[in-house]
Amino acid sequence: MNLSRNSNRGKHSIDAFTTDRHRQRRGISLVEVMLAVLILVIAVIGVSSSFVSGRRFVVSQRQYQVAAQIASQRFEELKTLGYDNIEEGEDEEEISFEGQTYLRQTQIEMTEEPSAEVPKPCKKVTVIIEWSLYGRDRHQANLVTYIGP
View 1 (cartoon, rainbow, N blue to C red):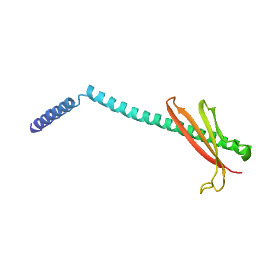
View 2: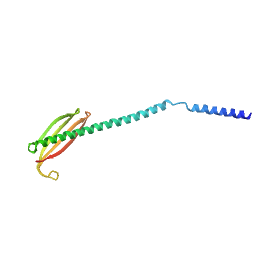
View 3: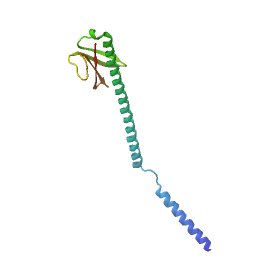
View 4: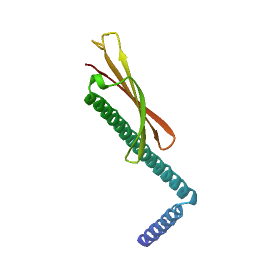
């Protein structure tokens, strides 16, 4: 008899424990789901904005590289003319490359006095490249070289 009482008492306590446990696990509330979704959306927006910023940086650096190549091309053109055929003054032209339009300005002036930078009189050539990034931001690259006789 004692054994049956103990076994019944144990059964009742296990049933009560199981019922309490089920009552505690009711599921996820709507507020918890909305909070989880909000955190996920914020994380996705953060990651996607970093990709967009990275892409803009890459495009910007590529355009600076193209601008430097366009300026170098102008320097080489002038060097092949020869010192005596390079005339002082300014000129301007538009150049299109990979769907982007660049404005190239060339300024040539004679340096009269030798200096620490320039040991003898020569012609100072400044090439200014301007372009618009995404139709709104204006960018500019200035490159200078000296051409001597």
